[in-house]
Length: 80
Image 1: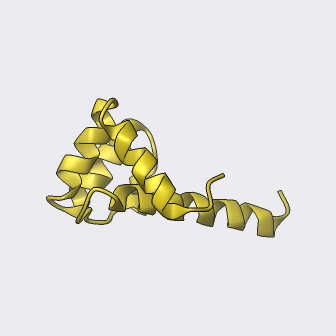
Image 2: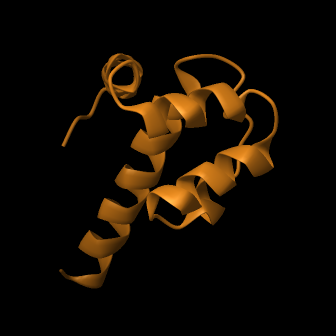
């Protein structure tokens, strides 16, 4: 697991250049938060956690890092 949110954001941005659905999330996410939720739902994940407007190119990666870290810490607290 990455601990540096900026490194995750840069990595996700580079990956978005080769994965069309992720690139679509970045492009439509700058329009509205609902678009980000819809694209993430279409990919197959729960989009309610990702309902945030992506103001810049790194925000999607930082958001993904925050959600992943939060889920990990929650599982650790529960004893998994």
